[in-house]
Length: 303
Ligand SMILES: Cc1cc2nc3c(=O)[nH]c(=O)nc-3n(C[C@H](O)[C@H](O)[C@H](O)COP(=O)(O)OP(=O)(O)OC[C@H]3O[C@@H](n4cnc5c(N)ncnc54)[C@H](O)[C@@H]3O)c2cc1C
Image (cartoon, rainbow, N blue to C red; front, side, top):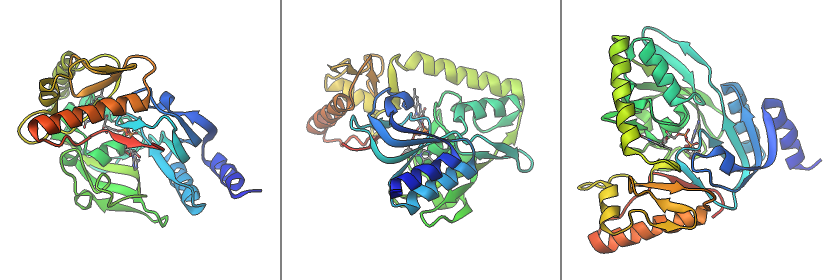
């Protein structure tokens, strides 16, 4: 038996395993080549054990949430992709919840609104998991995860599993110790959120208003949300519009003509086509305005 055969046999104990799974099936962009090994886990224990097993065998590990903030290379991802569907939740005190990291952020936010708990009305249209939301400190309409996050349960590279205070994550606008590379190899197993009791109908009305705004502003077509962070001074979409790229296309990839910070897949776009448009937007904005557009969407896999 090779070490990969042993790893495969181990991973099969923790979840459903597939080989050469196309990642275009698992990203909101609908783009991306295969994962060598793709294991779907359904609780935090399975997530921790799968991550430990892959790390111990020296194989690269990528934890996938909803795939809503990544562009996966056409050649895919080498090693193990862990498809995180750990969705357990428990009340851990007054208005305090502990939730596994594969939980849908939007779904949980809606549940909290219905339960009359304030703090996440802005999150109802964000299509990721709570794990992904920690990595990017997901936010919208003046709110962000950092406002309600108290602790995070992390698995480190040495297999240690512990709760740490949210302060240690260094959360900033669409960033954290993860995006800065300081927490490389760590996995978010669960989060703890503290909310505020409030009137449920009022919360649902606020959430519905955010939803309506989103529907008007955002384009159709498969995408990964905003491609770039907004630089100081001007929103990214305005700069991209000003350099003449509204509606630009490359194959089936396009810069949305509805919202220029959304890059969309109108059919069978390839990652390299999206990446070409991204580089073109960065080049033109740099040359015309001297502004460096920083990507919010992560390019992952074998480029
Ligand atoms: C239509 C649309 C609208 C959007 N609107 C917003 C918005 O308003 N505000 C906003 O902030 N974002 C928005 N996004 C972006 C995206 O939804 C968020 O960034 C989301 O938090 C990403 O979560 P995910 O589970 O999809 O992460 P993924 O894309 O699956 O992963 C992103 C990164 O996080 C890592 N990761 C994921 N889970 C874990 C874990 N458990 N442990 C360690 N690392 C992990 C992955 O390895 C990867 O590096 C939008 C996206 C779309 C498609």
